[in-house]
Length: 319
Image (tube, rainbow, N blue to C red; front, side):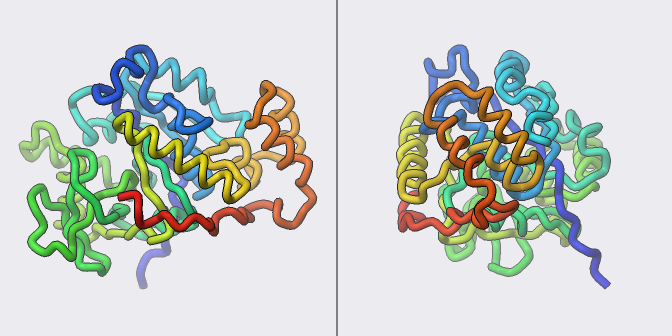
């Protein structure tokens, strides 16, 4: 009998510190703290994780940028979640990041998401991605490969094989889309890569090892969901414009941590009201004030998020 899928409740939020394309905006501010429309970029992946049931998050960032994340997010207790922080291993790569997070992972399944990952559309698919039976799952989408988003050869079934070069079949041409999930064996696998002669294992190497063991799966991004990141000025502008359009047409806010905490039952209605009182005047406070005032309505009950069926028909035009 197959193992019962286990819901992943821990995530590493990786702020890479690669900011050259956005200089001089990132001279003193981490790229993931820059605004995407009306919220810091990192709010979007964190709120998506919260909606998917993740309550423990480790933010990994270069030391010079960690203070900004700590001041923005704090301990997470106000939101009913937990944020912890660790210095990134610099040029050592993602594999070393897992070793940095070893005590945080503690043999539990864990998600890895880049702190500039933004999803627009129906977010329910993330709950499916985070239902891990064993092995690893990588979210894939058709697109152009990069160092952070390598090519994936995928036959449309459950098996996936990462390839550093070109795919043999363009019909299988997918790239990793910002989030992947690993079972509690990931630390053992990473350590095995180091001891077997890999000087600087990459995410590709980790996924290849899972694939070699026959336990790497691919999950294709739904066609009504848009995947964005903020690696260049044009990306920031595009993301801000799309978020603004989405929010205007759907009457909601994306990336709102207080709302995610309330709708998932991490905080009570009374706690939400107190949080609203602590916010400065502005659109963000007004939006949450309306949410707090409508607590009694059916559409405002825990877990019900009516805007997750977007009316914006641009999902196929972004990438």
